[in-house]
Length: 106
Image (cartoon, rainbow, N blue to C red; front, side):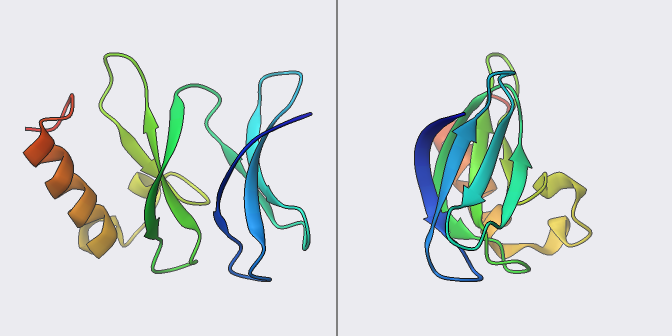
């Protein structure tokens, strides 16, 4: 298991959440203090948006893949959330991506 980067603060214990990658190329985010963890997508580059999910307070990540529209991830894919259409941080990111003409956003 290899440590990749820190992505934010754990909402449970206020320590840092780190991305790890296994030998099978699976990725997950984990707090090294309290052990809280969740899976991340296996493919695509991951960058931090500096915004927090209003429901669970985990950092919102931006997942980008070649020739695919970028999508957002907290402790699960944001598009699978029941509050996705009304989520203010997601609206801000989509507006910013549209202004910057990021691939897939018009």
